[in-house]
Length: 171
Image 1: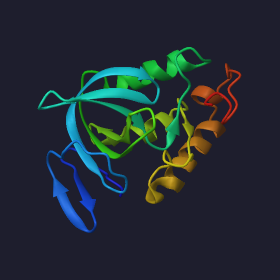
Image 2: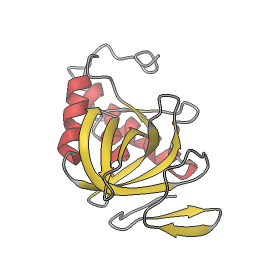
Image 3: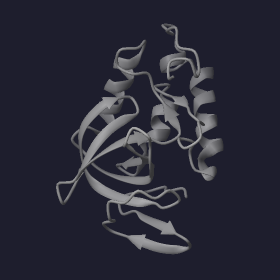
Image 4: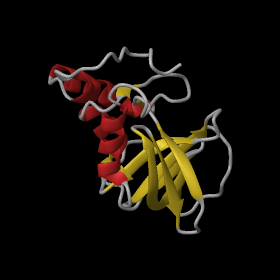
């Protein structure tokens, strides 16, 4: 599912359109819509959002992997994500819950796919690990975004490139 403008977002479940608030449930292959304000950014791929009912969801961003704050480039990646979303209204489409009890999904803020922006600016890697891979419609877009950032030497791929090796810093 590709969303160009996520001011008002709908999710599709088994060919049925679903809008508005969704229950707090643990099911894979189901999209849960969360609209709210970003309360905290933990690192370059994890944040919390509070919905209108004051429920807080911790979200791990789908299809990307960023260094933790204590790793090379982690602070810069976290700052970039904070600049993009902290304190702002956003919409998250949750795909599932991971083993760390975090929801896994895609965030849209100001009509933009923020997961994709982290890749485009070189602040994260394209991540395809089972359960964290982007939706099939986004695979090529995300892969191309990372490749473009590498070619243009943005962020992680720039002249001050750190000792980050793909797949090594996340164990």
